[in-house]
Length: 375
Length: 119
Image (cartoon, rainbow over all chains, first blue to last red; front, side, top):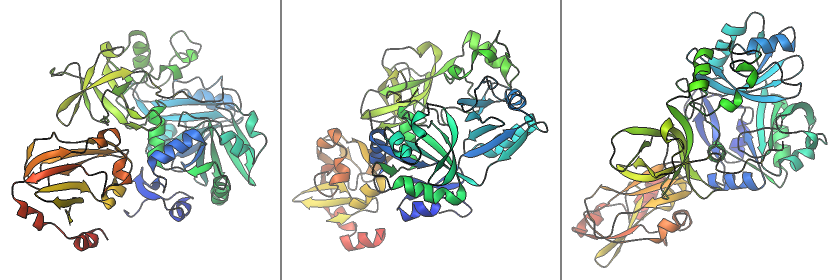
């Protein structure tokens, strides 16, 4: 394994449990355990899977009040931060001057501050970007002494509820500070698999103990990044750097649901974020491409980079796969990517070029599996 | 049985050679979800890419180990690609070929030599 890779507080536990490790975003992370990617995927959908996501960035934004911090963050993201209630979390994304997406994230109202969770690969540049936009009025503190794990799947509530009786009362996107196995944890009812579940921020010193305690429950297995990828793909969720990046806008990416009314044209706090002119115009007029799901019509998976054509012989590329593989729950290959807007509702066979051959593929609705959130 | 550096096994049965991938290769690949085989009757040259195996992780190619003709393919793998993980050295053979120069088989590794390669 390459030198200089960072390790999470759970690294030794991964090794002890026989994880196959790989480099991801500068960290040495588990890609799978003995069960294998297919088995881990199925286990998460049927029972509960535990993921180490400590490589992700945890950041606290703090101004003189929540309101001041919310107003400031609204300069960086096109979300309604101000009206978010205490103890609630929202999905969002940082935009650039062209309306492109710098990163996607979760942010929550923690009373006197905003807690933000960022992608591992982007966190350093995100923090620089936030400092440029928000300092000195808002302090930006990267939390480097906490691990982050996610417990996902239908058994999650029962499992975590054994450690703290207040778990069951939480709804999707609630966030609270609760004690788990004696450690002060910041727990949100959220995740990135399409299943009900929790993300749990734990002081690093207690991370292994809390993780071992949860893993000791019969329903729980440790799950690697391999299954995390197939789970989020089935759930239709974007992977930053693949399905969204600086060159895609929220309108291209079919993420306009995450831009609340207050920030749109004629809203109470319309615009005022980076790239707002571009995004407002695109919200009115649409764009020339759109993120959609794809269903390959044979058993051959279509992976990232596969180009899409309108017919078996046409030369013009009309789309491209940005994430694709086999969906273990659905039992056939699935993909997502971009397609020229005029084909976004096509019900015809389109064609993906696979090893020089044109293979039929259809535009499909995402998610590919029902989302099992506890609303 | 003979073994290639590409982790294929070759078993000679009379004048035909049965080809599959090794246990080691199937473990490395992870869960196999798709196998694309050549057409029966195809004439192939050594090192032609003639099989595509897709695991949950990635796609890989299998090369023709010999010059010759593909005389039979294992159709069952199209419906049940997971057999490649369950029984790579037995039931999950990929294809049978009739080599144009059977002496090419002798160039490959013995089981001992292969085990050294992967250890």
